[in-house]
Amino acid sequence: MSEHTSSGQSHASEIASRKVAVLGGGSFGTAMTKVLAENGHSVWFWMRDAAQVEEIQQKKVNSRYMPGVHLAGDVQPTTNLEEAVAGAEAVFLAIPSKAFRTVIREHAQAFETGQAVISLTKGIEKEGFRLMSEILQEEIPRSRIGVLSGPNLAQEIVNRDLTATVIAAKDLEVRNLVQQLLGCEYFRVYANVDVYGVELAGALKNIYAIVAGLASALDLGENAKAMLITRSLAEMSRFAVSLGANPMTFMGLAGVGDLIVTCTSSKSRNYRIGHAVGKGQALDDAVAELGQVAEGIRTLLLVKEKAKDMGVPMPLVGGLYKILYGDATIRDVINGLMMAVQNSDVEFILPRTASS
Image (cartoon, rainbow, N blue to C red; front, side):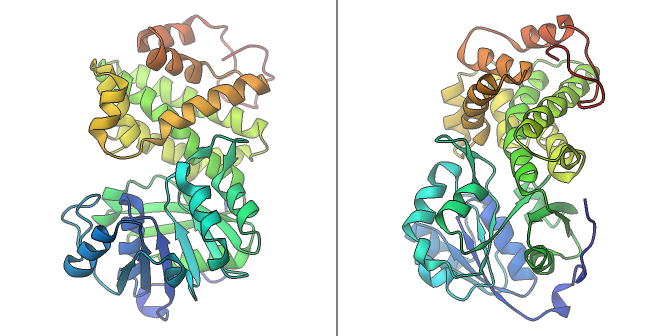
């Protein structure tokens, strides 16, 4: 993974203000809006909810998703997507995966030729197993596409806690632009060219965060938790490489980095779902109580089917499915790992001879 580009990471005071757009008024869209605005840029912040727009205009707060967080700087909330996107040097998309294609297709003409369009969404579309970058390529092919992913809990970003992320794009200028726009004293932006791997890692880790939450709820030992996380990494990288991703991507921030934070933090929505189910709560009740999208549930169902079709062994995915939709327990899943044929530790080092 490249750690630098020719233009480096500039502090906000060293670069001119630019118009950028953030589409999607949830927690991560709000966090990125805050970073961009505090870096001195004019941020057009689009969302469907007119009441949400009015609140941000009047109070500079998105109380539904980020209560108590003040949005300083030049933030322009709007329900007019065309107005937000027009003339923006970069458009950041924080739209839930289930609505992603619909929104992009409805407003495809708003996006400009050569415009940098960066997906922040960690999810997979059911039809055709499409990632968000693939949807963008299909719907607005004239744009220059990238994805942003990494161990990025929105609450910590708005608190200005030290954070690093990855911008993945084939186009060097897109990588440079995103590093310049977002980079600051607490937010470090690394670069990668493996768009598919970075994006797939961000979607897959949500599944394993649910597993980790279950394990935590049952007070399993630290050794068992470490085993689950590292076997999760082996499993997700095995699956992604089967689809064409670069295995080295999973050794970086977008892979193991994102996996660690999501599997160990109660700030992670997917982890909280697993923890609630582990404590005896029904899945539907846990999701309803969360009140926000937990992409891991949707991703689990899609990945389970895709892995079956491809013949890729994924015992943790299969085990989690049996827990959530059958009568298995997390202890059953771990016992399954312990009783399986003892295969290689790290994927790709030894030839695979059996399910691991």
